Image 1 (cartoon, rainbow, N blue to C red):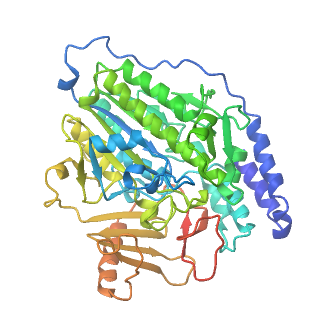
Image 2: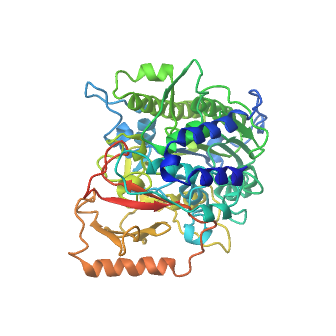
Image 3: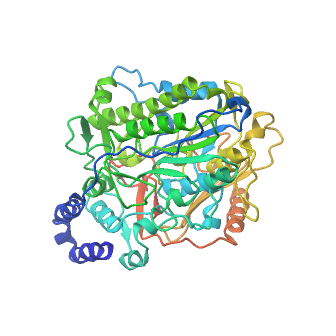
Length: 558
C-alpha cells in the first residue's frame, strides 16, 4: 500500500500546475483509504495486577517512577514558566497541575530536548544515547507523507523557499511501523524491569510498532499504544475541531488519521478509545497505579497533546474562555486537558499513599510548533519545533520526589533528555547496561552541588543541521540550501534568546566548536533510514505568516 500510494502521488506530480489542482483529490484518496479501516469497540484492558498487599511499606521500597511527556508543548504554554496561553482580557490560562508538580520538586531552568522533532527525542529519553550511536536520527513518517506535505507546501501562498522531496529515497525506506529503534538498544524500561519493576507504557511511542520494536517488546510488561492520532472522531458531538489551512502537515493528518489504540499488539487489533484520548489515557494510568501500588512500578505516560490535529472537548473549550483566534482557543483547551491529567496522577498518588516515594518527571518532546500559528508559544525564545534555536529545544523539566527532593528547588546547569534514562535508573538503584556507551549523566548530584558538574558539552543533529553547546557558547551549522554553511554563534549567558549572531566577532570560538562537532561525528553510526524531505522553516515567524526577503530560515531534513 505504501509503494502504491507513493507511486500515485509521484505520477500525479507530473506537471506542476496540474498537480496543484489535484491536491484535494489526493487528500481525498488518502482519507478514503483511512476511512475504510475498521476498529473494534472499546474494551476493558487486562493490566497486570500487583500483589493485594505488601509487607514492605511504600516508603521503604525502591521509588515508583512516572515519566510524563507532552507532545509539542511550548515553553511558554506553562504558567509556572511565566507564560500560559493568553485570553483576550490579558490574563492567561493557568496550568495548576503542572505548576504544582514544579513547585513541589525541582525545576531545571536550562533543560533541553534530545532533538527538535519528536521521535529522536523519545529514543534518547529511553536509551540515554545520541543518534550518532543508535542511528535513530529522523522521525518516522507514513508512506506518502513526505510527498504530500512537500507538494502542499510548494503550493502554499506564503512565499517560502521550496520544499524538496526525494521519491527514490522514499522507496528505500521500510514501512512506517518498522521505522523504529532497534531491539538491540537497551531501554529504560528494560533496565527497570531487570531491577524488579512492573513497567507500563501508555500513549505515543513512535519508535516502531511492529516486529521487535513495539513497547511491549522493548521492556514494557504492558502497553496501551497510540495507533492513530485523532483525539475523538471528527464528527463526535463532544469535539471542537480547528483545522489549519496554512499547514501541510495538518492537512495530511486530517486525511490520514483515525481514532484507535491497541494493547500489547503493535499495530494489529486496533480498538476505539473510550473517550477523548488525553482523558482516556489518564483513566488507564490511574488504573495502572492502583493495580500496582504494592510493588515498584514504572509508568511512561506519553501524551499526544497538544500536538495537531487540534481537537478539544467542548467542556475544555468553554472553560478556557474567550480566546481568539479559534485555533488558539482549541489549543488552550488541549493544554488544559494535559494539565488535568498531571493533576489527576498526583491526586491518585496522594490517595493511594504513594506520593512521598514516587518520582514524577514531566517534560515535552520538543518545543512548540510554528506550524500551529501561535507566535507566543515558545516566548521568549526564537525558533520552533524543527529548528534548533532555543525555541525548538528548550523544554520544561520538572521532577518531584518528596522523599529525596525538597520542594521549591531550582537547577541552572544545562540538562537534556539523554540524562533521563541514567538518572531514573540510578534513582531505582539500577546500574546502566554493561558494555553500552551512555551519553547522558545522572543529574541527581546537581541537587547537592552544581559547581563540580563535569559535563560542558551537549550535541544535537538532524542530518546536515547540527548544533553544539559548549559552556555558554552555542554553534548551529546548516549546509542547505546555500553553497556555504549557514552558521550561527551565540553566547547564551549574555544572549539567552539568540538575538546577536557572533560568528564574525569570534572566529576562534567558531573553530573550537566546529572541531567538537567534527569529533562527535567522527565515529557516528549512519542513520537507520534516509531523510526524504528538506523543509524550509522560518525562525521568527509562524507558518501562518508570509515569508519576506531577509527573513531567517533553515532547511530541516526528515
